[in-house]
Image (cartoon, rainbow, N blue to C red; front, side):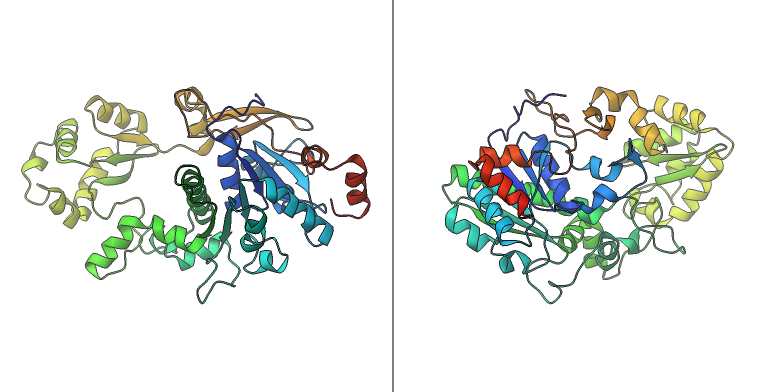
Length: 401
């Protein structure tokens, strides 16, 4: 671990007043890129995810919290107090980015909204993340990832045909919103620096993010006039492209081109399938996927996972075994790419985290700072802002920090 912020965002200060997942995930990405991310938390317990245990590292560091809060400094501010809000405004006056996910209207009620803060800091990039956005008939409705996956259509296409809908295994609405927020912030900073446009107000909604991620499933529905349905591991536009059961587990096979289809038939010693009128083209294979699935299921049924993987890879057919999460991170490729990070924590010892997928020729996004203790950097950050020891002590006595 290194504390040297040498990344592309070195010199950028982010005031992160968000909590739980979408905002903290965005803040972590900015921190991974070298920004100084100051996480603002309530004095009475901080971010809710600090208490989402088990599991935990050591006795107190919730694994959920740790997963999305590296490369940040934590300060405590009581935004329910005027003294706390005034300190927040002082911090925002020196920041490049403010990130928040309050209920719609709360920032304005507290006078820490974009309109107020940009008067003092016209170059400020202010990003709000909410369930449904800052306007529209549902803007004030609270939202959680499960609700978003249901209402944005994601659960209607996740799971197996004829079975109940299921949520995607991670909170994709939050993560998608966090990624869109990161992109938007970077674009606003770019425009501020190179187009001399000043700051900006960014409005990201979890609902919008999932609708955007539906991509080809949405346009399939627009084109056909029929809503896509659950298909398990199948693909609506490609066949075969799904999981198959073997004698001791499952493999996935992806025939994404005609050439790969020919190689699959060769690997299975089934040249008859190449000329079968039901399967000659991808369109025909999609139309006759049930018959094709039955043939391939029979072909793999008596083979082991290792045998199928070896056979298909030898014939240059895309194939993979279905791993659990820990198996995926144990892969030498994950280790080589730095996707399993280890960082020393002052109370929990060594903490393991997923790495960052963002890699540069001259910079590696690593866990240079451990997920911070609650309020670990309050005094240091306020001192950097110019607060005297007496002023900091007064805020502590007043319960503002």
